[in-house]
Length: 196
Image (cartoon, rainbow, N blue to C red; front, side, top):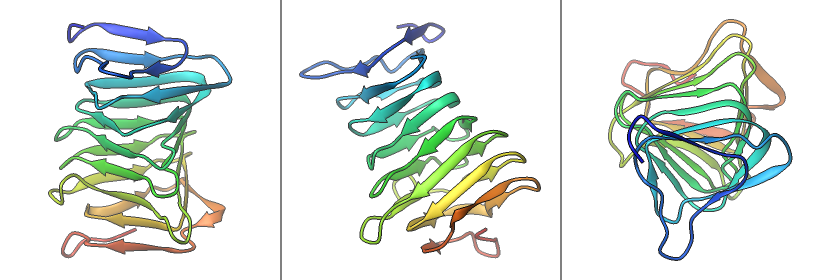
């Protein structure tokens, strides 16, 4: 698949056996309702867009070299590892992003992860299996912002290796009333920076 091509899938996107996906172009997931699955089988994608009414559940680990756009619908990380971005590539969340208990969101150095108006970000783990937001390979720092009109839910979480602005909750953003950073850890912040 060439770099400027887009493939649209209206259901599951799964690879198995010896199958993999090309690491070029853009994959767009667009199922209108219900549920669907994502299975990468060791593939690395370039760009991924979800513009759907469905909930997409990750069945194994996901690696992206380019941008991630969650325009509509739900992405359920299902406790898997999502490695996202290459240097300053951006993630834009207008739907619902869930890490899941035991899951990881690993962001590249200077990656921009933006929860936009109407978007919901959930870092909800369990007492023995936290939801982790971190860097890639213990190297670099990422930018994470929750914009006006967006919501963050956090409980049993770990945030680490943020940029100087930390997890930046902008004026007009919302912290969920139940999952309000109840139990969790911020560690390895930028020297002289903020955590939240």
